[in-house]
Amino acid sequence: MVKVKAHELRNKTKSELLKQLDDLKLELSQLRIAKVTGGAASKLAKIGVVRKSIARVLTVYNQTTKDKLREKYSDAKKLPLDLRKKQTRAIRRRLTTEQANKKTVKQAKKEAYFPMRKFAVKAL
Image (cartoon, rainbow, N blue to C red; front, top):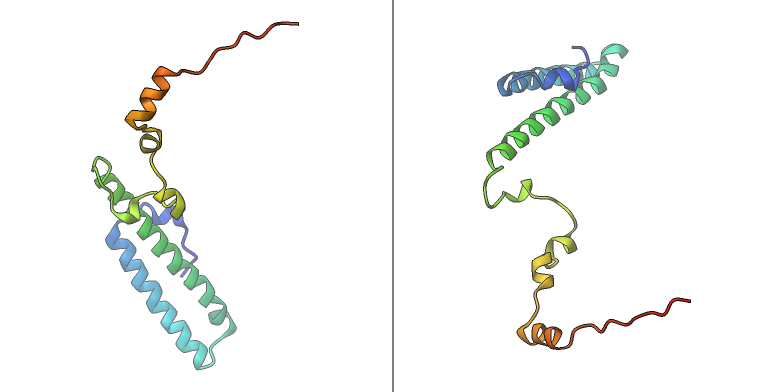
């Protein structure tokens, strides 16, 4: 089998991708059998190509399913964990901007009664 290209895989349906994945896995098992039984060097070199092709098919399959899920949950209020932004643990636990900017009643009164003083600066 020839090296598969990701842009060609993106046009395929889910069932076609799964079928191609099965074919590639079958081919890989046959190549591994050939390796054990002392097959030709060309077959041994093909193992790497087939493994990469399997990885490409799985990558495209997972990306398309995730894209479809993103479309499904685009207007939902809460997202599944794997569709949320990753960021860092500290950022995810940080207060939101609204929470950080909230003031207590006492602090709000203090700022209202004692605003920042404005000073005129004399020009040289």
